[in-house]
Amino acid sequence: MKRDSCDVAVIGGGPAGSSTATYLRQSGYKTTVLEKQRFPRFHIGESLLPQNLALFDELGIHDEIRKRGYPKKFGAEFVSKCGDHVRKFYFRESLVPSGPMAYQVLRSDFDHLLMNRAREVGADVREKSTVTEVIPRDDGYDITVQPDGGEAYGLHASLLVDASGQETFLSSRLKLKKVDAEHRRFAVFSHFRGVERGTGDDAGNIRIIPFGDGHWFWFIPLAGGVTSIGAVVTKEVIRQHRDDVQGYFDRTIDETQVLKRMMTGAEQVEPVRTIADFSYESTRFVGDRFVIVGDAAAFIDPVFSSGVLMAMSSARDAAKAIHSAFQKDDFSARTLCAYEREHRRRVRTIFRLIRAYYRPAFLEMFMNPSDVFELKAAVTTMLAGNADLKLRLRWRVELFFIIGWLRGYMRSNRTMSTACSHGCSIHPAGV
Image 1 (spheres, helix red, strand yellow):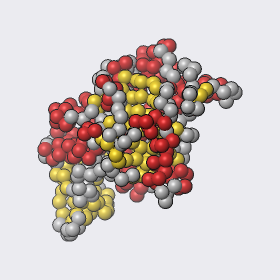
Image 2: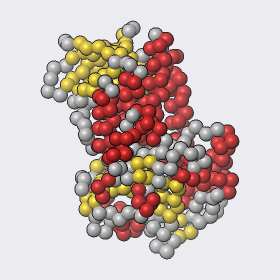
Image 3: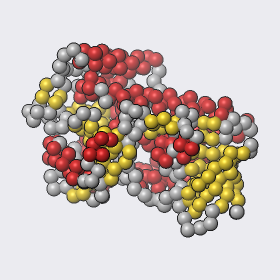
């Protein structure tokens, strides 16, 4: 069997894998990316965060992104089902100046841009190349690769990066994957043309529209007049409607007054798709001579648009740890664990916010934020993707969670909601 070699092999060419490869090539390491699909390919998760912008600069892609004409996202909106109750959070009002905007991207184009950047800096990117086996050795990993339509070959790498996304290549094989039983949901989604949007700075805002018990819609404006619309629902809902997902999606939109109004005359331009939206994380992000990044390490519910940021920031931190390992000539888990500490802290921060969102008392706070103690600014800071707050700012975030738990306790003893003119449940009391 033919055999190649490299310093680092990366399984997966999505944002985590391509970004890891670019960072490693910037440090001079011979890097091979093995991607089983051909790019561009359809993908969901189009909404980015202001914290992404610094990573674009580090990777050298920000100018190219500006040329793409992606819609600018200046904030996030929480909208009641009827549309009468809207709360807007603008990134410029954050406690930390992380940037006043982000982008809404077409993932097929954005991911291809990241992959091409990895190629541009010298990574050996091999598409339609499926990894079928990895065998640990004292000096690295022996990897078997099956290219589409060709003969299998071997690749030896001193270090292995798993960026395989929800396939979770390593953590599934090593039995490290731990599913969050509290968040077992599915996303049902499609793209539409001709959907009504906001105006001015609000034209590119993501909209979160809660409906039902723990269900919500996303509304993401994309370039070319296309809008991504998806519903996140429980596993049981999908099981009940699995024979008519399109019909369920259409009916749910029709029952959501604000979406129905905005989508009058809209044209569906992509088939309805479903994807398992189970939150999970690997019990380990590193081991001897391996690192797990992006969705392969942890997948977090998409309500706060953290997916691409978590993928790219994990790539940056993993590349730093890998560089240190090569400098020390020590590829043990102990050397690589600096990456795990940093990334796991971010994962837990986002998980905490998401668990809060799905509790009614906290959702009331998102729908009716208070400016007392700058709590609305604290929420905006989290929505912008800031996980690194100094103590003088972090106490406001902690206060937000404390008040939410107290309201949850109070809520169990009295009714706190009223209804708007369409019978849509809203919660007018502030924090």
